[in-house]
Image 1 (cartoon, rainbow, N blue to C red):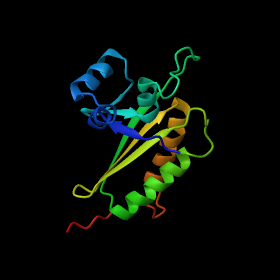
Image 2: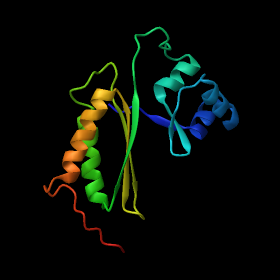
Image 3: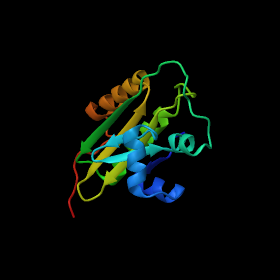
Image 4: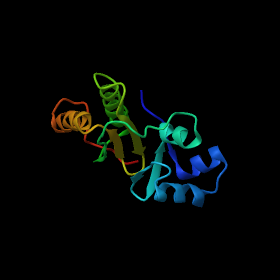
Length: 150
């Protein structure tokens, strides 16, 4: 199960605050967020913790989390869909359900570029990155490297 991720603007709209206030909460550490490029993304559970809808995890055992962005150029829509399905399926199976990987995929039709954003446990993230590496470097036909520009 992939956790929903929100932009700063979406969070501001959902909780009725100004965008600057939300950014201030992020900078001060009051709201957890992940920086992706020049933008922040806020996990639904972190938003719930801020608004009091879910208990905040304050005194939990030390835990590390990594964020990774994989950019794949020269991918058509069909290959991006297949790769997205593979990544999401892998992220949702065989991992610690208490700390699931959070994965988001984005496809840029004009640039024939796919980005895969992975947040989670270092070991589980490494496994997923190894899978991606194997698929991207294999000659199995999953990804058709030829992209025809319209």
